[in-house]
Length: 286
Image 1 (tube, one colour):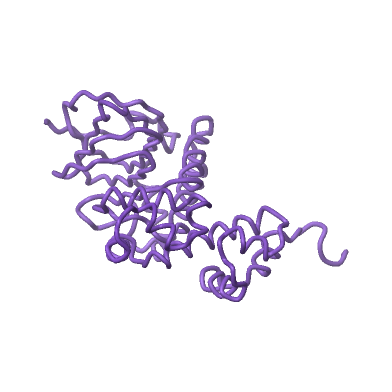
Image 2 (tube, rainbow, N blue to C red):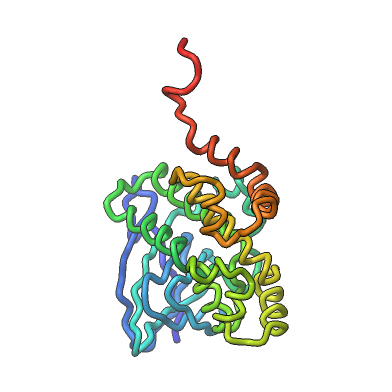
């Protein structure tokens, strides 16, 4: 497979800051690998593909979000049976440099600024994947401005950071599928027991693999999923706190409050008040 250098100005006018494409890949073996002088993010909207990257070969599937750096050399081939549709965003190196200079402490050497041999891949599912797809598709009709690409990248990066427990590269397929299933209320309400059930493996084996690939125990991972769902309900509905806790699988309100405070630094009620406060009509008139 021969190698070629791609350059951002081939795709952009001088005034444009990014390029967006929604593309169905072909299943023919790629004729070349490429490097580039820009950064690239691609999200598998559906299907699966083989990714040749920096001398390695990895299987990607729906929901995988890949952060490609200029130094990476890669090529992509769609799965012959499932096909593959990707959402691809390319942007200038100076945009990445600006984000790193301003937010590098928060990103902590992750995403586009990872020093690992292979680029970072985050596996997403459920409502998080839906949100990422919608954020990316918004670029189709937006102006190709610096403001727009920086807003998009910060939304994606903080969205992933908020996930808090990305499945690491090399995780077994059964664990990836269990994490996808754990986004569903009928699974996460059952806590670790529901996670072990959908994993289809022994409890001890699931615990070891979850710690190895997520850095959390099954209980810690499911608590995080449940708390994030609770936060969504608190900010978007008027359901009583007890009803929110019950819907997320917390039978003990004290435990729910403690776990929520650990994750968000405030009580469920405090979180709701901050998210729903009306800055126009609340407070005394001036």
